[in-house]
Image 1 (cartoon, rainbow, N blue to C red):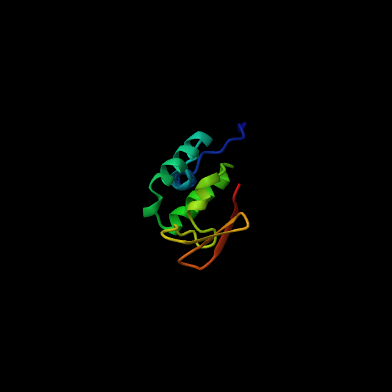
Image 2: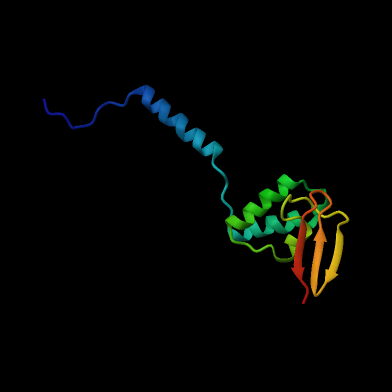
Length: 113
């Protein structure tokens, strides 16, 4: 008898394969287009005063992933601890704006034009 080279599928291996595919589809991250990611970032920064540092870190990571510059939005929170500036100490010296974070004490410096 001539065999065609194919074997009958084992039911347990098919079931295992099905569950692996199901788990991968459930837990894979949803991919955004660059415009969708930019819209999500813009809507996030509209009400930034109620955000936590962990949420800000996630949005920064999203912006870096899609190569979207935050520009003026990055001056709304501390670089080190990612907490929102509530009422920071601000000094201007030699055309440099120095902002001191209230939560971690870090100084953030930016040039004034």
